[in-house]
Length: 213
Image (spheres, rainbow, N blue to C red):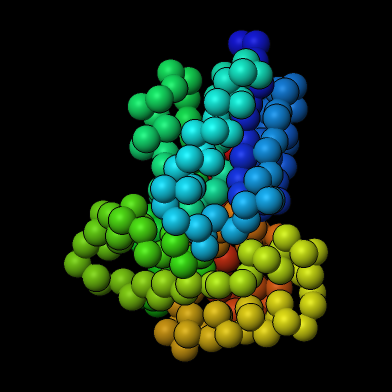
């Protein structure tokens, strides 16, 4: 086994959903996790700021002998992963909304995506849409779920305000008769139970964490 740590980071606690899966399948690896909580959420920050944080945290990992870096944040992946890959020589793994399996497997012809405003608005997300749904044959309901990440950061997973936000953001997805919903923020798997309940039993909620791991 190659010596060195696997560096995993996110704007806050959300990336722990990926770190948890990495630990399951790579139990002997040394993991160094950084939650940049003081600057969360990245989804509300300018792109240049996100890029600066990604490069600074990655430099921290390299000083601790990182052999791989996981950008466990959809927003940071969209904003900075291409730049980061030009700066380092070790593998860099990112995370982005899992549109491909949702579009390929939908039976109703509609899928939902729940993500931050910056992820949904990013050029990288638009490229995903163009790649996996070029003819718009599948209706993709892209929901900018402002405030939902903060509910996870605050530990308010079952709080009334969290449930209200989930109901608000899942309503258009249900109205479109979507049978798949993609969690496009690494914070959202911690709310998977609540989101699944709001969407109902006929909707598959896709958590990308195992695939990233």
